[in-house]
Length: 440
Image 1 (tube, rainbow, N blue to C red):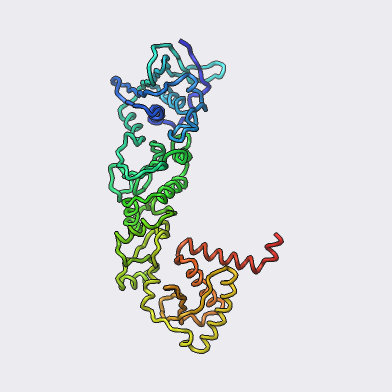
Image 2: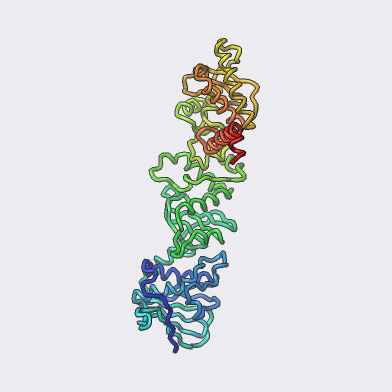
């Protein structure tokens, strides 16, 4: 028998529990991509066995990892085996590993030179076996808690998958419960309120995980889920997002799918789902009055999270409610109103040209006390007569605002429209301060 001390102090990773240590040993077995068995050995011990290549003494070295370049496994830091066995030994659990033609027993022993307890491996020669057999002292609850962290041992129905992700039904809960998990290559790294559970595969998944096998942060998780939802075209997933999204404001706790922004390259499946769920006569919510007017006209008004709403090429309630507004021509205005509109139009036209917006050939007018200053409907700009006596620069601003709508097709209260307006302002500032900008 030979004895080997590793310079790993007993309190290293002191936040790790026995369950974390067992998780690492199960993960090492699963990473072999062979048959893995977890069985009771006797009243106090369990075994974890695989049929992989086996381990060597050098695999206990901290930082040494054969998995860092393998995108399909969770390991990457080269600490799982050494830290996992350290934590078990620190908690007084006996651990024996048999692999190839060696038996390893892991304990602590006092080192006089370092003046501390160091992780110690007693290695003994034995008969050659295939794979690795780990025997540990643990309770059934500790084993089951560790197993529950793995998709292999949890109960999730697969909804859809590709090479980068899997979308799963949440186990033991309804969709409305929002009890979801995020897995990376089959290992649970966080729980969250979500409609679905997700298994992020490959290298993109490994980027989410820290040394403690937890998600790095909530923002990274949101970005990963947004990417998954942007790529899916599965009808059940899309239908569920739309159906729950239409009532999301009633939820006391937000679901993560309603917080992310989805960037689908093909929006046709989403539009088909809208028609299937809500019918042909549908619009987006704008404000309470416009919503009610649209409902009176027989529309279903969808109040969806921004991240979903932005995908749908449908009008908002203000636009559809404008259908019944009586529009008049400029010649029907009072003479002084015509003068004011023409002046404001000339002012706005300078900005329109600078910002390369679509030119307008005509403006219509309507009379309404709904608080709107202008609207766009069916490619027509219309100004509210009740605001024609606003200051000329405000009237010109309203015209520019509606031209941006007309050019971009984006609705009010959307991030896309805010960006459109910012671009117009930037172009105008650059043009009017060109000498200053060129000298920078």
